[in-house]
Length: 239
Image 1 (cartoon, rainbow, N blue to C red):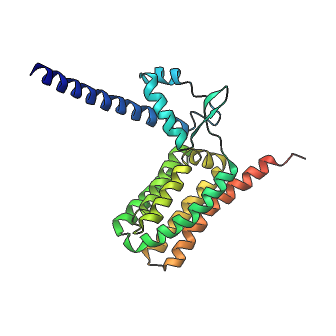
Image 2: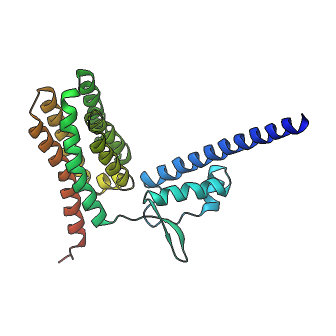
Image 3: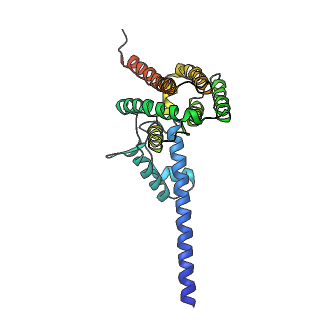
């Protein structure tokens, strides 16, 4: 009887420890990813596990697990003789991801349109107004978060799960780039808000699917064009 109770106790303790470790790993993952996305850990920043663990008040183990997850997502990379660092912006990857996202998000938005109700329109418009207010004292991180909230309202009703999965994958790939995109081309943020309102009007007035898809696609590709133009200007030697 004693052995049975002891075995059960060990099993319960192991289960509790596993849940605790999992919880700390999740906390570490959320914290480190948040710092990468908001720019606290900029591209090339060296992620010293012991220091991060100390800052978060956890052991190195959950931090290591978190870093591995972030590496799998492409937000972190390991460099020889350096260790874990925050991944930089790969212009080619950004180009391909944005091109793909413009296509699949445009399709998802068009397919969602007939299923978007008045409450959804009102919610999206309220988010867009928050974005407009954010422009007065521009905060690219908050603006980016609101931007994703806005678009989520428009594409989450997509009845095709495969297209929706591709949209989510695209947003995840851009997780480490989105905050720096609007920081890099802040003028694009003003245009983006106006385009959001135009897109909402198309949906609420029952525009055809092709018109909505084209508007959503051009809205996304316009951000890419602005980013590439700014990057080209920075690379052009001053005369």
